[in-house]
Image (cartoon, rainbow, N blue to C red):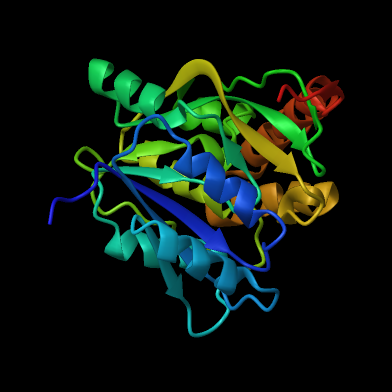
Length: 264
């Protein structure tokens, strides 16, 4: 059996209200050579039944169920263990891709031999009716820009080439920390890899309110713990990075809050 080019990975926990639209955004991709691995983290809202129904109609969709609730990082790592694609594309259950996301990202990566990329995106209101201004991360994601810039789109925009970055996993950090995705990008750039921005709007990051990052105070405290405890930066360096984080996060929020009608 031929392996797919791309493994799309989605952790799922009580996401039934978002799943049909998210699944459709993958199914409508212009690039068709993918598998979609959805790892259910012990949902209780009908998410499993929705995924099973989708998998019955499309053999590219695969459902994995965890034995116990372990959080999104554990769910993603379980999917990574069985992923068959060379390219890993991450998509959370409440987020969306535009139809040519995979096609454009793979073209960009292959033409430039980039080990991992991320693209521009817009924040989407919970009801899906409004979007914000286009958000663009730094032109390159390295150790410094990871600390001082915001706007990479977190998991929703990332695509990773496992031929260049083998055995990619989400690091084990305290489960209560919100920014396990940031720790994952840190693990990549610490190996000497640089991410590159595809300056094209290709996704929607939903401001669902159910997102763990919806608590701004807690997110800010978690960033401090990541800098000071997880990365073990000197106090002054950690404080400097945190101030830049806070400033850039506020600026990003003000500039990109959903307020414009979403194009249909």
